[in-house]
Length: 568
Ligand SMILES: Cc1cc2nc3c(=O)[nH]c(=O)nc-3n(C[C@H](O)[C@H](O)[C@H](O)COP(=O)(O)OP(=O)(O)OC[C@H]3O[C@@H](n4cnc5c(N)ncnc54)[C@H](O)[C@@H]3O)c2cc1C
Image 1 (cartoon, rainbow, N blue to C red):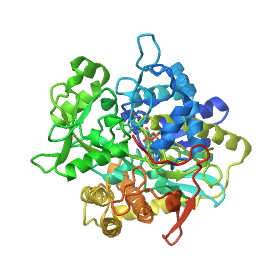
Image 2: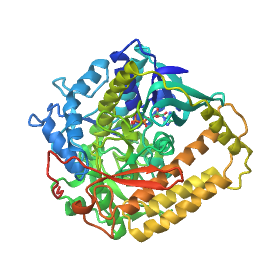
Image 3: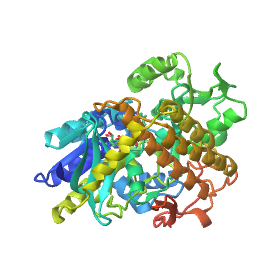
Image 4: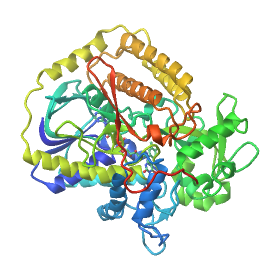
């Protein structure tokens, strides 16, 4: 259990890190540890596509336009040199993946096809029907196996082990046996994904998107950044919150209210349905709040996403998965009827604070992917930029970790950490449960959606934070592991994930209360304007040993484009 480079997470970010690391130095011992089998990572659920200025459809597109669109989309909170780096790397990394065998959809001339996407000034999103993440994840996994990367599948990372200066490794639970082990590594990359499951029941994310790496970073006393920024995707299915890709609007879908109006004409006359996600989500919620939405028998409010005018052929070719999901989960065939949709918690712009080299302040510890905040998405991510971010920065993290492992020794110590984690787990087995995990998870989702949703205000957030504190206290007193077996105990894993969610929800709520402005995905009705004078900064938060937060203001790199008002 000793590796030169240990990567936690087997989504797009983790696999790309692993591939770049083995290619950089095949003599090193490199392993990927993942709580789910790699191809079940959330990256596999990504639908719409990945951005790169290939200019295959629109010859006037270029990397600089991609850079500007991303910065504007971020509401000027992204670090501009980081964005430029990502956008200029994009065409190269798409070709790399093409050569690995990622099956992109094609134009008639054989070039990679590109579709329009929200907030983009050109048709820039490369796609594979509506299964981009699925084909990327499978290809990257295949390649990682081919290059001899070691896999520890169905291992759950518990904590980061370090000596105050350098990383020692991580503690992890072998889900199959119930044993806790210390896994030593010279360099560790956290590629543990996002945390939108704090909106339990109101999210497009897989069950496993519980921010485990980000919570472990907080417990290790290291900083997280911009946690108040969490994106609502405009189009989740009414009942399940499962995602309907932006590609559905990219292919020409309309958003309609109960009067049959394409209401986006009021909010974004030039971009219409293809305005950025923050704006479209707010517009949908405004229509609903002002009585122009629909309501079903169970009180769920929604609007319509109409694809019927696209015709059966286009829907079957370009959006086959969307059709399948809509039929299975809503009983609606989008060829014949409009799809009932509502905004769904989708993507964490905030996460583990790193620099452009993916380094955290702890030597040997790196982060990549949705878990990381560089920041390239600022206050609002553009669709198609996350699959790009995870591979571009996954690659950087892999190379940097190799360089570190080549020039440093294993740090010693950390032996007692296994016993600490075992003891904690034992208390969960020994405790008598008086409430159930299922109930408390739903309660968390309700609190977050009602008090920290698309629209927020100070009084509602204060009330929500009080409810959250009460929930956290009950969760640590009243929840127990009901299944007492050691082998494949998913009850235990779910509870550990829930404690991580609570850790994340707490810091997100705290960060939200400090920001008295509206920017990108973060909208306060009591402070409706962006306030560059006082709030053009990254919130950088770490946890002190007594549990209180240290709140710092991180500088935003605006060296390329002067912040301006966003109009679409
Ligand atoms: C439904 C949906 C559709 C999307 N569509 C698009 C799109 O079209 N275009 C786009 O650009 N973006 C899209 N996104 C966003 C994008 O897919 C994600 O941000 C991205 O895939 C995250 O990749 P990742 O590698 O960082 O994390 P993930 O793919 O979430 O992987 C996380 C990994 O970490 C592991 N892990 C987590 N915790 C632990 C632990 N405690 N111990 C061990 N392992 C752990 C997991 O097992 C998993 O392997 C979509 C997201 C969703 C939810």
